[in-house]
Amino acid sequence: PKPLPRTHIDKSVTIKEKIDQIRNLLKTNKEVSFSGLLDGSKNKTEVIVGFLALLELVKQKTVSLKQKNNFSDINIYQV
Image (cartoon, rainbow, N blue to C red; front, side, top):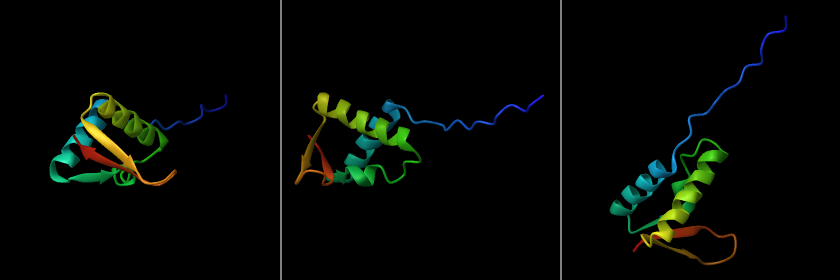
């Protein structure tokens, strides 16, 4: 019989964990860049979860976002 294919499942981060991470960063920094927030991301899933966490914080009116130009970095500020 043919051996089963091997798969690797990455440990993904939850939206709650990412929200907590963003809040902690904003306690010590006045401003955080989105690219800086994603520096430790290991895969696309973590980038997506980071963006969803950011959208949730905006919805809760906890943070505000500024972007100077299209496709430039997004800066995150605590409200």
